[in-house]
Image 1: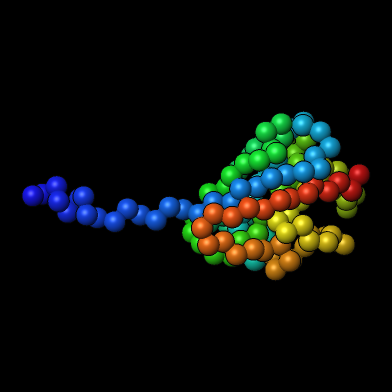
Image 2 (image 1 turned 30 degrees about the vertical axis):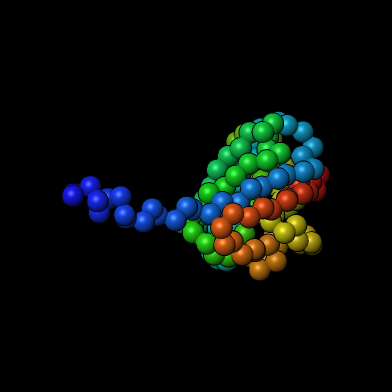
Length: 136
């Protein structure tokens, strides 16, 4: 009889995930630094968001990968192609020396796009196709 409550308890809902496909890498050197955040103030630098999901993906395996999100909601993704694996985006004066990309592929003018232009709603599993950009 004590087992019965365990069998009837509802399983926790699965956490949603984003399947990401990346195109436009100029090479397979280094890694991709990936940031998934729901905090507009922490975009695109997730270091200010303790609830963000951050991961590194080998550039050679970056064609397709999954990011597990904490819950359904509105998120944005930022990716840096860290070609020399030093865990940061290298700059030349004010221009990035390494590639970058964002969910929804917003137009880049000066600086990073807004959270709003890169954000997408997640309710269950979803997909984002991200095209990398290089300035130098």
